[in-house]
Image (tube, rainbow, N blue to C red):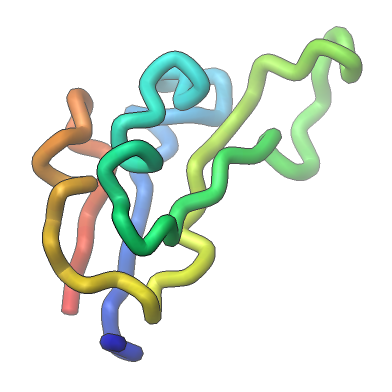
Length: 85
């Protein structure tokens, strides 16, 4: 376990209804063996149809479980994931 690992997602590139829709991609979720990422609706966003939300994001919910394999970084098609130790 690495308690100092910082993982960030650039939401201008992925999610929040601005960048790539993470529901269509999910590469980081698929390649992460420790499963540190969570796909969820963007909290606090106003949607035209709250029963069919369009604004989603991926959050690194458990970064202390990261094994620094960097697959999430290398497999992200829009270079939205950054991992810093």
